[in-house]
Image (tube, rainbow, N blue to C red; front, side):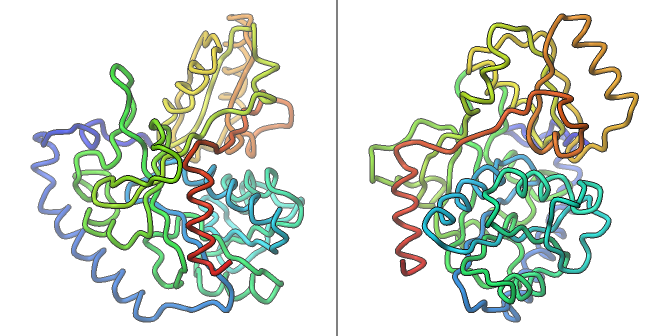
Length: 337
């Protein structure tokens, strides 16, 4: 379901003002519940990195989780990524994702991560995060990465990364980092903005980087700016052809914008609800549109986890930028490595 446009307006709109009392109640409950969880947090015997955000969906957490897991796997660590498994009907009790699972069982994000990561990296799903972390530890994990863990304070963490959308360049339609600054249902925040102070650092996506080694303040947080971009290898089959791009994300326009910036010609863009479950009629309609445009279909790895193999070109992402080594160096200090 697409989020209301008024959530992302920089000024207070009438719908947001009318919903403000409910937002204040939601925020108060979120603060109390988070504090209650934190007092009962599980402390793992191995380092834990949390990657999360303050807003509902679409901040780019998953590419960052993938990049961190790949980095630490190359350092010889046994890495386990732990996430909710949203949309997966088997993701209630702790479950390790395998080649036999489908997106309907473990969720699209979990399956996409499992397919993208080196074979030695474990991906675990489950509703109760402490139980999942315990299972990952028992399976030999030497480092835990919590995907979407900022509000899940029932697991203690050594480093807390708050992922933010960068401010959009002039003329581009991209969501502001915190929208209108209000909690659900008046705005996109999962908790009041003051909660950002729990973060070790902010990781700001796709803004111009700071000078190497310098992390500058961002909404009161020390911030590293990194770039999440499509890989050249995954774009190569699309170069020189019209493209019908489709995506079911929190902010699919970010995906479309990245393709345009990479020089692709988008004949049509199809924005679908986050975690969409593709139906045969939808797939047939996408194929008809591509045929009508003499175009090639392109989508994200998250969407591809729910599609027939080879249905569309999968656009993979990579994380880079001058601040990326500095972020890894800061994490090394936090993790004692």
